[in-house]
Length: 196
Image (cartoon, rainbow, N blue to C red):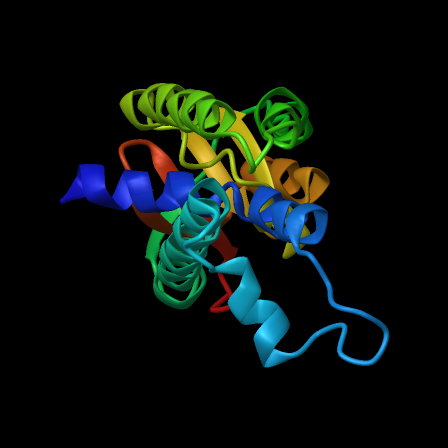
């Protein structure tokens, strides 16, 4: 079950890519009906198999990604969490921008009219996913940053939080407790304890 959850989180980390692929590859109609039902239907026309397979696969990925976002934002971030100490002296910000440049941007070069290009990019997507899942990299998700979450690594784990680095250091220095919800392994969602 944990592996399925990690795969769903992995797929949701590519949500910016899916949106960019839609903008890059959607063929709009003429000025009168540039975005109509017939224009949308044309994208899924099986007479051009690589293109229709691309669009159906993309729709499935988006639905799975939305489910992953729902799990994170509606389940983990809304949980009360357990009271915990954070005693780490240093909080290192994780580089999700590097994730975008390294993994998302190269996948934008795919040619959806070429079955070979689609297969190569699918294999690349699977290879990246294997590393992501095996190494519990579920915190590497640009969606979290877009919604105001910071990702910090520390000796005691990796924290996904809206608390700033300065505030975390202050809380650790004053031995104040925070609300901590475990997602997986040593990865936690942190919230400030309001009962003080």
